[in-house]
Length: 421
Image (cartoon, rainbow, N blue to C red; front, top):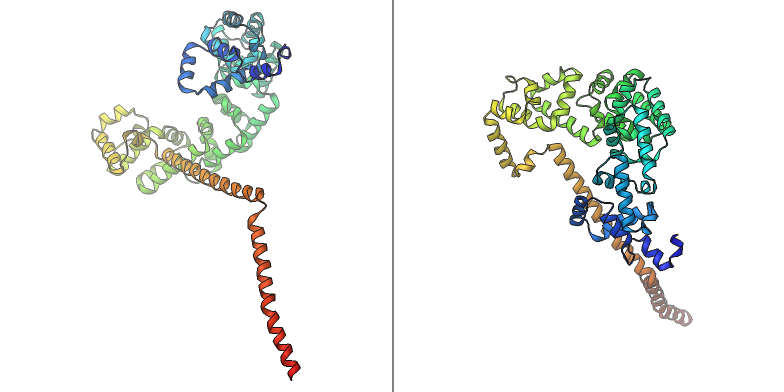
């Protein structure tokens, strides 16, 4: 149908810049909730909005031909079929534009099939497709097969366990059985856990099956406050799988900061080295809110009189009430460092990582500017016929001619002397 337009009109439609602003007006006014549209208008430039509109239009070209009233009717029908609010349906259709081409009956049937395959309530099924709209693009047979394959991969877990796992991570239903099997095998080989233990880890944190294998391996290698024994490290992950969900930079930063604290305080060094994996994992997970308290206890000499878990797990208000001078110490340390209160509350390893990243970006920009200038110089030389090389060749030729002219009289004088002799 788009071929019925003249070439310039087709080009403007695909670019989201038609004369009647079909893609721009419809997608912004119909396919986006008013709240999101207001935020987009306030934060996005016109160019970014047009790129977004063009992406939606290219994913589902019929929006370029449909009238606004038709799209509004489709949106309302989809919201009714899925039992969603218009705002929820708008977000879902913008995230997956191909769903705009499905009839309301088809959307309702696929939602019902998902609900039946996993034994979900209606609200649970709606929540799943709200997080992963691509689930509405699979047939009922495909959804049932993926669920059965995942259940078999996890050692024949119960339907209730499978349901809880998929409610935590619905995107697992969009992955192939082979990919999930490879991810589970990589996790088992990396940690040295048994097959049953690896399944336990995945059941606690199913998102581990969505992580890139290289990133997972880097997080595993970074998990080392001191040189952990393999069994100790495996038990640490078994007790707290969330540690492997952290980025490698974050894991490394937490472990390094805790190691530095142990090197500065002998009592903390002895205490942490005696902790079992379960308790050490709690410390690492709570470190973003507990690091300042641990540092205060070390500098004030109160680490021996305070239970470690009080410093780690107490709320900030409760800790301030137990140690009234703690707030004054925080303000004083922030003033000594010349920091704002917000910077003083940030974890030091994150501040260092942000500074390093900023330095790397600045260095990359400098190198890019230097490379651009060099490319411009080379391009200029190419356009002018390499003046530097031609001028150097001309200078060399001139020096040769001068040398020849200076040696000619000397040769003539020598000849004359020879004849007179």
